[in-house]
Length: 310
Image 1 (tube, rainbow, N blue to C red):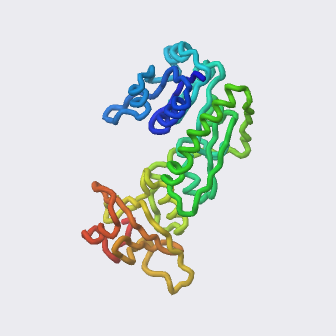
Image 2: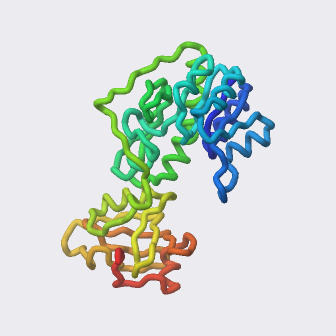
Image 3: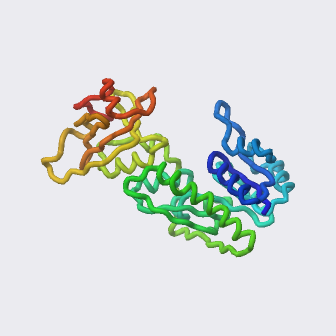
């Protein structure tokens, strides 16, 4: 088939490679304009390396963007991680319209951080949807869905890079084949089951030591590797990454105040929270790089008895 690919970053690049590797024609690639000071987008680099027509419009709502897409004479538009708004006047131009990837089981978790929030809430399952883009954010009819588990210790990186990324690339190919062959079915989303969440920002990833250990642990997992859950130590930001939770079952097991560092080991440190302790293995001090929590303690960065969140 002949496709027009709209996307960015590593997922867009992987989808481009997948269509080309199986022999499809990529008539043109659309990606967002370069940001000042940022490294070139992975999809842009790949398109240029392969000599494909590349288009970087500040807005996909422009007449120039529509005219360019129309001239490509594409069978299908494929949106692979797109942050620019694409109006109906743009997405309906290809002969079979356009399909879009979203990493959640729509209509649940519409919005830009749909992988983080299920982990932060302690969900045991998530998935992906391939749908028809409409003018409402992630609201179009669904063509294809795939599910995957969220393990109790899985991080954002585990779920995305280990499951939703490769599943998503394969699902884009499967959905494209169904649509172009006219064998797909479009299911209107049930608004009664819909939810929307905004960006899982650094502010959302702040740890409150009055919270239950389960909430803190889920938050750390949902922010690992980005944006990084964090707290403060004597006014300086301290980001948390790899960790483990240790629930307490008897009052005799409770040690220290909430947020207190109660143990320092060779590889980790332990902090008291409601219902147990967080054992932290990897952290990032403000102005520094990721490092072992044990090494940070040995260098004098943290000691038993200090209270986090101060």
